[in-house]
Image 1 (spheres, rainbow, N blue to C red):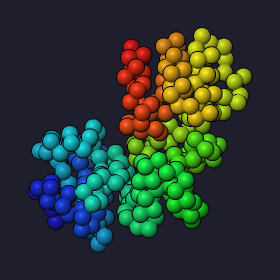
Image 2: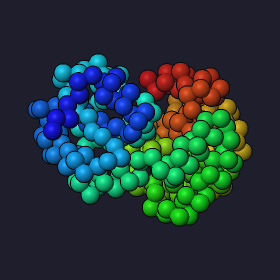
Image 3: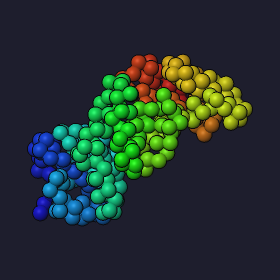
Image 4: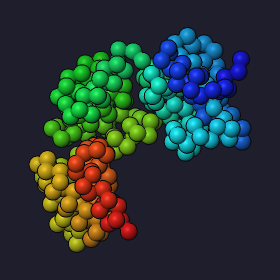
Length: 270
């Protein structure tokens, strides 16, 4: 059976409204792709709740660019026309099955999706309510842990860090969110334990940023953290830079603080 794409809109986007479509972006010259491909095809042969489409990136460069494929093999799960999850690299069959179990639509993924929507609208309390049972009943569900950590980070940073630390994620976006939660939690800790930091010209601005963040004064926090970047971005293991990126990640690209300070931060790096 051939899984090669014929028309991306028909085979992937339109089809994903009927059932989830797993898309394998690959190329003939890619060794890991040749390892991953047979495992995906074996699973697809046995599946009745999702379908597989393979996209040769050499033959379909526009789709690869559109969906941000930078390394292959890259596997994306399309549901209702959008990418719900993805991973990069050759995973063994059992790991792929585990990943599918976590991301294929079911009651758990529906709750996670609703929680994400609540977060996008600024309703962290609703997101937490939606995920409490999911995390309690599915203790090894990494996406639920990361999304709940994101919802809790500015109200209960200690619990958020515990959830993030326990989440073993392969998805790059989830991994970025997990690292952002961990970084913000560290800053909140430093606001209460400044003696954990060594002396450095950037220390004062860095701690001011941490204290402002602990008080949820995001605009002030970013201003001080950018000042610390300008003084010594490498302080605290590249802390000032990582702290700014973490805040921008958690607040989101459309947040007023991100819009106001992102360009200034980028300029401070050079």
